[in-house]
Amino acid sequence: MSNLTGIVVTGASGKMGQMLVRMIAASDKVKLVGCIERSGHAWVGRDIGEAMGLGALGVEVSDDPLEAFARAQAVVDFTSPAASVDFAALAAQARAVHVVGTTGLEPEHHRRLDLAAHHAVIIQAGNMSLGVNLLTRLTQKVAQALDVDWDIEIVEAHHRMKVDAPSGTALMLGQAAADGRGVALDEAIVSGRDGITGARAKGTIGFSAIRGGDIVGEHDVIFAADGERIVLRHIATDRAIFARGALRAALWGQGQKPGRYDMMDVLGL
Image (cartoon, rainbow, N blue to C red):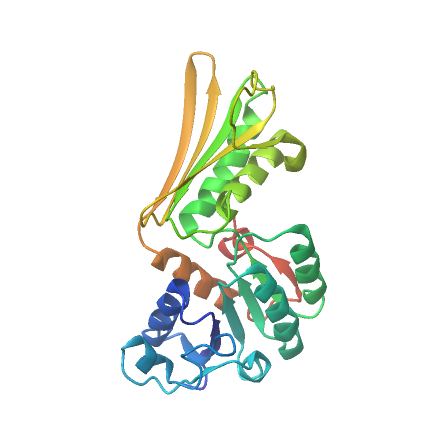
């Protein structure tokens, strides 16, 4: 067991946290060495397996991330932007690979991740799935091939509990489209429309967000011109694809030089 990569899961009580715990417990490549929750959470001090109804796993939920990170080779983090940047600094102290699947990151959050990445490996992506990252690369290639007479719209759908919009994946796709066109996304983006908006400005990249039910994640990239459309689509039906990608990233990060990476690096795309 000593040759297995030790993983700490942050936000262990959340949907992604619990998915990761289950997947790690069943893995023959990684082992669970810590679970983190916020101070005062009902699970702190309990065995994570018992808290999840799985039976004891021998790992107690803690509110002390630095102590847990010191035992780990990697931290897998699907929490909140504020928590993730704090975890990044602590993971860097512990020289643990930090896999960040948190969405809703603002420029200041990215700046703090960049600072932490001077000392440790940080792998951050708006989406950890193989399919979405292939879609991202295709989006860039198609945008590069088409001129501005083709309008670009990104439509995303998620469950009712998602708190950020556009989704991190939608923004990742928008960035790929902007890169393909050789423009800055923050100058081309149009996020949502309401009222008398006037005609669409040429060269913009539009975003629309749908929230409802238990939708795991659906993303369409639409290239529309007079008389024809190209639609690239990815549909996620199981959060396990994100957990698998995150664990793959945690393993890939072992032995890499300190710095910022994404799933394109992990997947060799």
